[in-house]
Image (cartoon, rainbow, N blue to C red):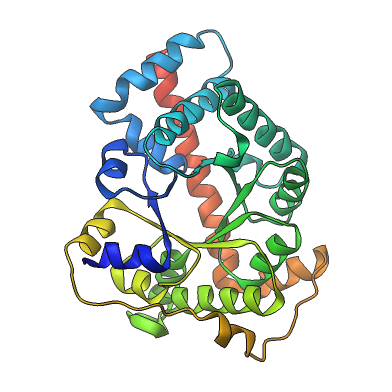
Length: 311
């Protein structure tokens, strides 16, 4: 078996793309998108008809409404390909507004349900800010499942689990990027700082019995992926999926529940003040969270400008 086939024995593989053809090629269980991936997809000729159809069907409506319908239109197409779930992102500009994020999550779920899709197949992606985590807590109690994104440190992961979030997406590659820039060194394998961050979260969740799923994300190389074999889920870009499919060397599970249970990690207690302080104390997490929100906001604006130019 190739490495992709082997990986699927230990971990649920998720396609990190808005490209339908890539999803068909690699047969993932789930798929996840974000504003950057949607922006990239709609600029391709093959997806222009879908974009134009949404714009025509909702002519005269607000830009916010058109974007929501576009995200759901992509989600519906994806759900025709993958057997599991699709993640649809809320507007990153709402990252510090709990009430607005809750309203957006409810609206996206309503659009999916109006199209005949059960809410169990949808994950609403929300930035792992304090306000976003509180929004997820509200939505989860309503049966709206959440994928907590832009997650870079253990305090974020703990707060998400305490809030009852369905899934978290720790950004392995962006953590690696920060440390590489700071040190000027490339660290591969088990010592990769992004890999170590996810392993710490995995150990904490297993030791203290949290059910929140962990989905490693934002990979830069296959070494990071293989070091996290055994994680609940891994969301992987098409180019790295292809590299795994092209390689046949043996892999094994690297994350072990029994080892996690035996660890000496201590339980963390968090309220808003301690969450903000611990996040602030972590320069990498603080900088990458802020940067991630800015980049997603910028790509949402670019998407709006593209739509405005076609309307």
